[in-house]
Length: 305
Image (cartoon, rainbow, N blue to C red; front, side, top):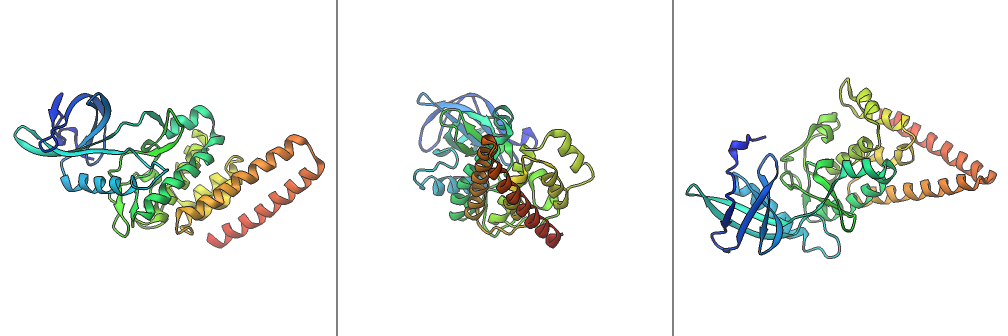
């Protein structure tokens, strides 16, 4: 991470050198490895403005935002609004402005509405990743802090694109707690399976009580420890197969994981309805289903480890 002094602070009022749009800065929003983001207004509209020290880094993010916002119907992240330069202390600095998304961070939202909603949110996130990957990009630094649930339509959106990387290159930014390399599960090559590993860890983390998470990760991060968490967590158990396959790098695209997650959610819902009815036949079928999952999961676990 750069120090705060590495990023030139935006003046309270400024205009772009080429597009001449005038901005009024309200407050800082945050800082990442390659830039600082501010809340500002432009023509009465709230926008997020990002400025950094490396214009090439920012232009890569701009190109990614341009490519994915051409996809209709599904919004992956904020819409790009402006790209320009400004002079700070006589030196040109590149910035871009984007839609300001008002929402709640993924982990805080899940903590408020309940862990049972995490798989549904994961499916939404997989839809966003599917489109991003199809455009030739990998998000890279996927973590709860970089995902928000918007206040209005309750949709999952990605924010902070500083870690976005072209497929095939080395991942530009990562956070060890959600990084495949940090869990000794593979390299840091930008590919769909890298993001899907991070998504699996996010799902596990958000559905695991803090004490249980600390217990299993206290002695280091390995995929075997993640499997232990899944095995001992009743809430995670129905999603065992897609999570294990993502952790093992078996999925080659987000669509395949999404299909399996949706199937698991439906089975979970169906099982819950049968239990509520108290049907003896339903309980027998549920038991057979659980037994078959245990057998399959045990076989896969032994085979992989």
